[in-house]
Length: 497
Image (cartoon, rainbow, N blue to C red; front, side, top):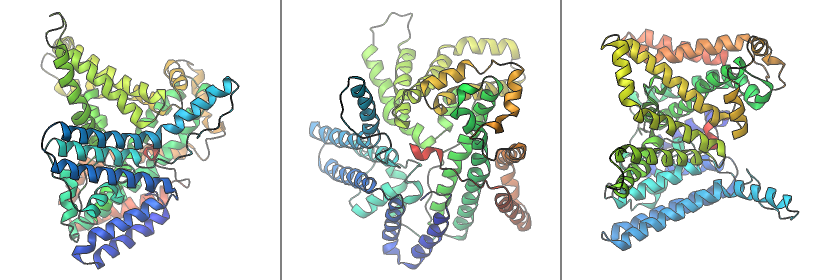
């Protein structure tokens, strides 16, 4: 049941009404039943099987960890639980991919063996609730969170419908206490929740879906283009992905606020980052912090111990440990997004930028001191922001392209074509997939992007202003959505992960 569907438009108010009507003791049950209905909408029984296996394994393993003292048996129980959760994830997301490639290999050898094809098994949301379950066990194992003994509330913690399919990925210490003391939303919750929902809808149906009309035709047939069209589509995709994913997050946070629940903020102006590492801290925050706490930092520690005293003095153990951990972590991040080489390449490109930033920190500081001399701080920051944004856009090529081959073609043809590419840019609508894209669509998209860019700075002023100014702004936003929502609603990009 996508957030941008008419069925969800009916579903959410019905759940809010049920939540307000039931007693305080049954609010958790109302939300759990609603979450199960929400997850049943795609009509894939295997999704329920995966959710049940993950919830049951994490819950029982958590109870076992709470009974065992520190020692080998506790560690074995923890790693056994994590291993089973990873098997569920591998089975849902990667077995179809592997079996498809095995089919291809067997076909080449003349052997006939039919196995599952990619997409035969739905994996909606599985990645998100599996790694949330792993974080629950890891926090318990480290003594950072107690075991949740109420099986129903634990199931709700994993499958709370606003964050079920695309996050945010919630830590037990943040969400479980709220689910134990569910309350009726106050007027501030309702106002903020509705505003976030509306803002998320604006980002998705006005900006992201409209930009898709220009991005999809080019990236769907990249070998027909060179130069400006590829560059144009690459920049627009960066904006489309942000509007799409942050729009979903705003809608998730808004829906949760209608039940008095506060979810984790997932974005912090990522395209204003001053380095690639800074971008990664601001983008998909619940996931990047998960990787930092459960993968990157342990790898840095273990790599440091393994290299201690074993390298010549000319090589920094700290920098080498950082490089190894960053490359491994971001390769894992790529695989988490999908079993394809272009996702792994995307992760490795991000990691390479981060490692190069660390290795060149001293010469870059000397160059900045030479160029700016301690003055023009704003210019220096602007240069870093623009440079970082362009590096991220280059990495997004590997993320968006259908294959590694297409990504490499795009990367090597961004600056070819010359004047001829201007004609290709003007004739995008000749593509069979361009659909309704037009100059008017581009104008609406640019105006809407301007609203999205200015809103964070203007919002505090509106909140302190007279009520009629605030409500005029809210009405204008709703009117803009009604007038300029795209007719062809697209699926959320992160739904595939």
